[in-house]
Length: 448
Image 1 (cartoon, rainbow, N blue to C red):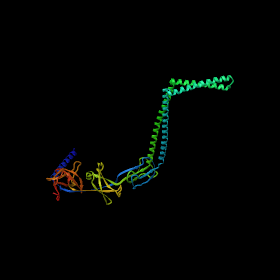
Image 2 (cartoon, helix red, strand yellow):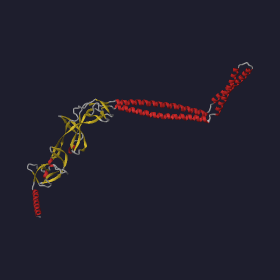
Image 3 (cartoon, rainbow, N blue to C red):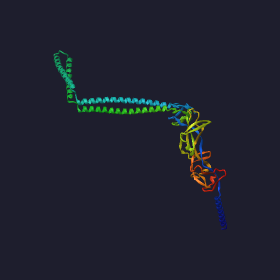
Image 4 (cartoon, helix red, strand yellow):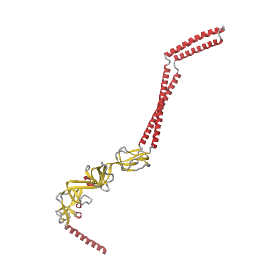
């Protein structure tokens, strides 16, 4: 209990002493550096460094896999659009093309055969149709007249044979002709009689017309011929599809063979080479990296507060080993780097003589002048994570004043775009030790 009472007494004495020190400080005036606000000509020089890169860059790769037979260019070589960069071994692709050509020839022969089959089957259909039509129509008048004439001739021949046979039989009975002559006369009579019967039968059939069986048979022949024609047409379609497929295969083989030669797609310089002769290259695997170096670019990490000074189209000085050329601000990238707080600005320079090369480090300078601005020392501006502020000297007191910062920092001075007026006084030294309302006085020699 005694120890506790002693501790409380000690704390009480300490608090009394601290309160006394605060009250004493409140009555004291702090001596600070003070400057009077005025506008000054703003001349800004920015100097940043960056690495040259090609404005345009692309990879050159084979579109088909294979073993590299030859590489025609090396790193640093200048190439033109259409130049041959490298070639693959073409033996495999030539074999594929030969096979495709043979396939086209076979498919074409099959197609021609199918066309011939259609012509044959078409002729058969026409013949069957004509035969069926003729059967259905029956004999024409001319055919009936011919058949009647045939019958009349047969009857006349039969009458003559009858007379000759009777005469020779009488002579044979009298022993005036030989037996052989008599038998020949009888045979001729028999043949004449048969011819008469045949002519009569044919004429009868012709007059009666075709039978149902004959029409059905003719129709069957026509159906068979029609089916054959349809089959020939289907075969032609298949042969035509096979021929088109063979042509497509041939075109693919020709295209694959053409892709065994790697061609440059624009004028530029070889920046990198990934393969040597004899090595296997996969489809789409970069063999060369090409860049256009008649124009070069450099990316500069611009501080966020200065980015708006580098406006698009602004001319800048670009120097390399004492040589200076002009560059143009091409673009300011929209995103800030989260780790560095900078924004990339792209500067483009002409390099028509190809005197500069990608990978070289250059310095870029931006010079701005011609306008007046309020500039204050950097140490006068305080930022505690919120809005920046300064302390103005008003009636012997420090008055906390929020300010707006401009985009320039020149010779350790910050541009103030708002919050201060010309003629006002601000604390420039010792501001970080002040609180709003502190009593202050200007140090000897400070601006009044």
